[in-house]
Length: 132
Image (cartoon, rainbow, N blue to C red; front, top):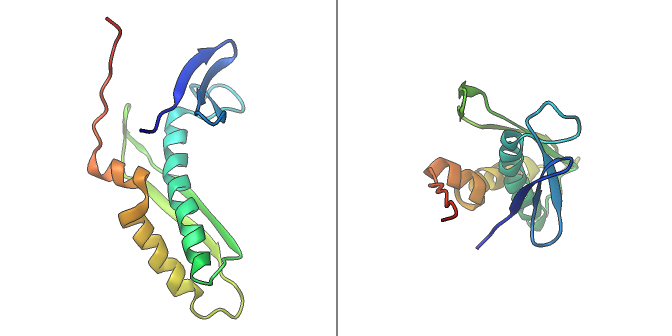
């Protein structure tokens, strides 16, 4: 099972994992923090990029630049519309196959390997447990 702890602190809100990493978050009015929606978009992008990069490199095509922008509009006050990932890639000079390999890997990762994207697409249920 995967889990994080999210709690209010004296300076705002923080999410922590079991390895000691922390991410500060807030409503969007504060400087230097992510909103929960931004963290969701970061999770989609992170899941894709940390899978695409090693799979492309493993096939012998280390990309010079690999970045992305992940966007979504709110279609209702509490509901996002479709999430769009836009890659920004610089291919290695003289590597005629790099583009084809990158595109195939990126599509396969999105369709089969990224847990975050697949969970959103499948509509993973979220439940709330309150103390007795």
